[in-house]
Length: 319
Image 1: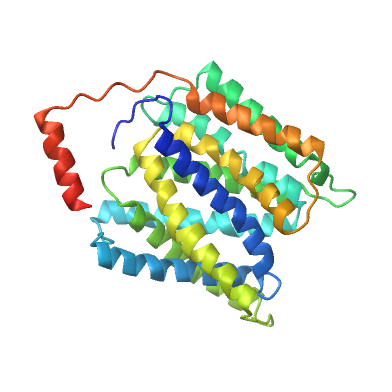
Image 2: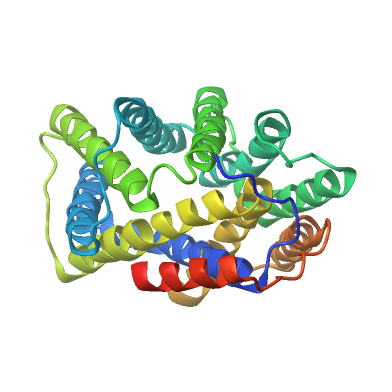
């Protein structure tokens, strides 16, 4: 496993991860649009099967290996099972709680990862500044969805627990992806997770949605293309690459921005309300993310040597 220095994220990492979060925020809108004509589990199955097909041809074109030694294939299988579990629990759990509670509980994953990374990864100490930043961002997330967290008289404990379990498993999954740095290509990570999840979701849809109708309208097709090509194939691969090359705690903290983009796009595209309380939540999330991602030792200046020049040239040729 590559040892990454726990230092502030550079501008490229921040911009790329912010783009990923914006794409994931847009996925909330795309899912809502797609569910107007497609059943939820069947829609998710189609999404990930299409993603795996795209990544298969991407890998063949760029000569990215998809098969690895037995030890790494077992890791890929484990990651795929975890990926399937997360997606299934998010769908099932959200159906048994409110959307606001599900969002808050699911995006608690950076807190789980920060706690686990302190024990599982080198150079990933949970400092007081990181803890303060994570707390501030999570408080902002709660404010952002406070008006949607009320459950009324409906019991939500089971749904809440399922979504929290999905958040915890996501944190563990991200740690495992971090530990594959230098051994497994990010495209392979997402390909196998998407393929197995898609196949398992097809089975679940067949059992639980056999009477559901699939209407492949223009909006449904556009939703699937966005979710599979942009949200999954591109952003998941970019996220896996960032995890492998930068501090996992800092990268994952930026995930708090995804629901902020989701609320913003819902306001712009679906006419949803955006209150002063929610704006305060946005400010809290952004402040907390800044505190975590900007703390630590500054990046060491690059020293150009003959060896690094050769390595850079080889990397450019490989790309």
